Length: 286
Image (tube, rainbow, N blue to C red; front, top):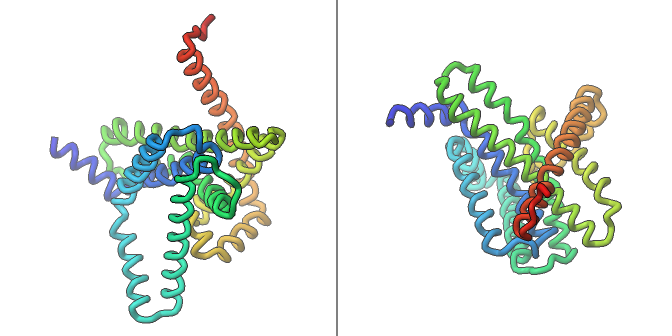
């Protein structure tokens, strides 16, 4: 038993590094924000805390294999601050300020029963839009599975019984987080009396997510780069949108997202209807 666990641990730590779990954590962040922003009344406080706790747990497990590299990066920043480097001081101050602002806004929204469109709401909406591409981004994590298999360092039984099921579940959960986030957004627009904007809003989100997926997968940018280095993100995005090959990739990604979202949307709404039928004592087959 010990050798089996060792094989799995070695595969995750040395070969795979648990990227799928970390990306699943990032996919759940906009899901939580969508409930806080759009459908605060539809989810009980206890369930919201459970969702946040589960998301935090997935994030810790996904981050653990890369913790030494993260700590080394933060240590370098701290050393720069101790040496009085202006760039390090500005970066640390900026990160602390952003963290405090987001924590304050999140606390206020958690206490707010009916979210109103104040400045706090708009800032959280911006965070939601920035992090939302992380949800469909999990579709591209199949690359890590292919790399792990082709490395020849992972036992076949680990690939078949651990990696493939884990990838399948994580990809489905990540993309489902994307679907539910957009459904929450659509419900909010309908509640505001502007259902005609639901489809344009969905297509706009698909387009922005396609751009975000390209920047993340090919340029290797992260959502927080928009905060840490916004000028580089803007320049890279403009360069991608004016180049033929990146635009082709983005357009193909947009089509894939649109089709997959429409399919999963129908499945999700169908399951919701079945649950409603079951609670009402109706037989869906009649």
